[in-house]
Structures are given as C-alpha cells and as structure tokens.
Amino acid sequence: MTNDMSEIANLKAGLIADIEAADTLEALEALRVGAMGKSGVITGLLKTLGPMSPEERMEKGPPIQDLRESVTAALAEKKGALEQAALDAKLASEKVDMTLPADHGAQGSVHPVSQVMDELAEIFADLGFSVATGPEIEDDWHNFTALNIPETHPARAMHDTFYFPDEEGQKKMLLRTHTSPVQIRTMMTQEPPIRIIAPGRVYRSDSDATHTPMFHQIEGLVIDKGITLGHLKWTLETFLKAFFEREDIILRLRPSYFPFTEPSVEVDVGYTLTNGQRVIGGDGDAPGGGWLEVLGSGMVNRRVIEACGLDPDEWQGFAFGTGVDRLAMLKYGMNDLRAFFDGDLRWLKHYGFSALDVPTLSGGVGA
Picture 1 (cartoon, rainbow, N blue to C red):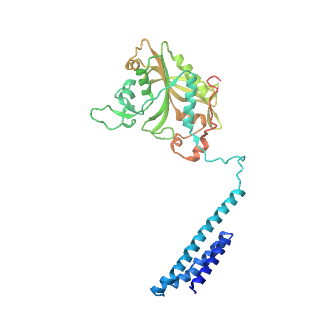
Picture 2: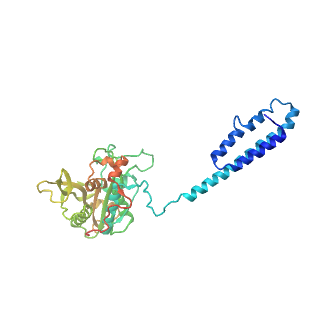
Picture 3: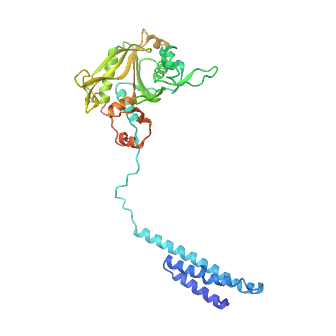
C-alpha cells in the first residue's frame, strides 16, 4: 500500500470525483465501504502508520489524515444532497386527495345512564321543573333526621348505609342514601313555590342483579299552595308517557309508607309480555299483562316541611323518587343492573349511544 504524497493526492482527487458522480444512496454507500470500510483503501493507509517511526509518522501522517477527513466530509455532503433529492421527488410524486372522505377514528359513546338522565331532565324541564344538586357526602341530619326518619329506622343501620368514622365534635357523616337531602337543602334556602328534580349518585350497601352499592336516582319535589295527590298522579303519568313514548301508560297507585311522605303511594305501571320480555304499556290486569313498581311517592310530611322552616298549614307539596338505572333497564331492554358499572367496552358498544346521534325527546311532553 503506497503512501507517497503525490499518489495520496491523486487518490483523494479520484475518490472525491467518484463521490460527486454518485447518483444513488446505494452507489454512495459502496464508495464509502471501498474507502472507509474495514478493508477500504483509506483504512489500509491508516494502518501503515503504526509500524513507522515517530519521524516518519510526523511526515506521512498528515496527508493521510487530510485524505480521511476530506473523503468523510464529501461523503456526508453527498449523502445529504441525495436524501434531499429523494425527498423532493417523493413530495412531487405523492399527493393526498383531500376530497376523499376521512377514515372514522375510534369514537366514544354516551352511556345509557347519562342518556336517560338527559331524557329525564328534558321531560321535567317541559313540566316547569329545574335541576337541583347537593353533596354526595352528607350529614346525618340532612339525610335522615330532617326527613322524619327515626333513629330506629333500618335504613340508618350500618349494614344499609356507608358511614364515615366518627370524629369528636363533628357531625355524623355518610355517603347519601338518596337524593332527598337535596330537597331539604332546597326548601331551607329557596322561597316557595318550588319545583325541582334532584338527579345524582347515591350509595347503599347492597349488590345483586337489580341492586348495586352505587346507583343513580332522580327525585322530584313540588312545594306550593293547594297541592293535592291528584297533581302528583298527573305529573307522574305525564312523565312516564313521555319517557316511554307511549300513550297507553296506565298507573296503579298502592298505599305505602315512607317516613317523609304522608300519605305515601307506590306507583306501578302496567306491562305486557312480548316474546318473553316486559314491554311497558297497557293494562296490567289484562291477560298476559302485569304490574311493575317503578316509583315511590307521596305528599310531603308536615314534619319535613316544618323541619325546613316552612308553615305546613300554608305550604303543601308532593315528592317522588325512582332509580335511573332501572328506568334505563326497562326502556332499553337491559337485564342486569351490574353491567352498567362493569366498564365492558363490548357492552357499551352494544347499548351505548353515538355522541352525534343519540335518542332525544326534543318534541317535548305531549309531542
């Protein structure tokens, strides 16, 4: 392997000329391997420096180092030029047709419970009700005492209610078991007449196919002068007809007992069996029919009105409550309440509603 200066100069000129003439990245890579590779010509020259004496290395080393640096710079410059040329050619030849419809990406869906909550709010808005909210962590007075629920009532027991640990000097706190405390808070802060619904999450220590430790409830309250049980029946009948979108809804009111209403009534709705499935509507006493409990309701107890600082001789009212999840099960043919909270994407894809095309009740009550 020669290392004469003139030959090194000629080698340098020849390699740079070949690099400049390369027209593809593949050809340039072959030149790099031939010059700088393990067996390349420049690599061979660098190896000759090892056996030389220090004096010879000082004389012959600089031209070889200059050769390596010049060829390395030429290779890098040419590679950049070829890559830019390839990119320019690709941009010139490839085009995106912006008139083609875009692919639909992954889309979310509206949970059936959220959809039903929206439907309920829309119906009651048409009936003149506003939405009221309150804390989910509630104190014992608002959740039980103000609602005329005695200390001995089973609902106060630990096996039914999620209590927080007692703290000295603090009120007894719990996860609310119903949205009724919202009614109490509203009556204590808002002058009658009052027409509200109170939707939200509630908590009870229960779990099976029709009960979950956390579920959704909506309650309604009307406080005004001259309110009667007839007003309650008409309101519930109008609401259920709009929600199930049927005019043949028949209600059956059964006497019951709730501490916070007097008189109290359970509300059943008639249904018929179609292909083994309950279909809401029709006379429950007719052949093939039956009755299904959907609501609890009644006239607000005088003691509850008094506890909120109102005069029960002047103000009367009614209240009702129902489980949002159960209404969703009835309307959309679901058979297990626990599926609402499993987070199974397959279930949501089957029962969920498109965010851009959800069932609505935009026609309003009586449409």
